[in-house]
Image 1 (cartoon, rainbow, N blue to C red):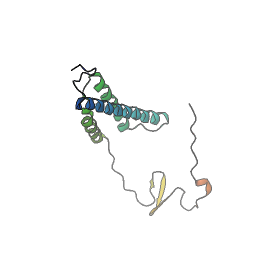
Image 2: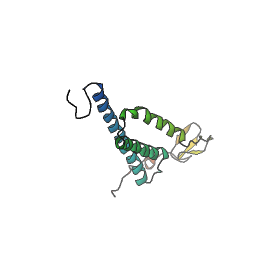
Image 3: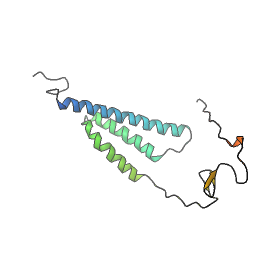
Length: 139
């Protein structure tokens, strides 16, 4: 049998597993790029950069780089990535919601009983109270 250019002795499951591993690696690399995009957009528009987004970007980039540099079996990403993200979920700081009573301001809206309104109490909603479109200026 002639040696294969990929180092395999046949076209059996090994070549399929190799191709599936690279396909999985490409998905991880694309997920890393998307995670960095999310972090960058949040930073550029002035939103708070969230820990979980930054940690995801760093971990996905590290995993994608590590599996290429060390030439490891990329199918291990099938169990490593979920394990890492479950661990990151445990590390995420959590805040318990505060109990808001009637008339408390929650999320920019004034609570009055069971309904929420965008306008102050005692005033009818007018056309000026409707949301206005947001324009983004180029940099």
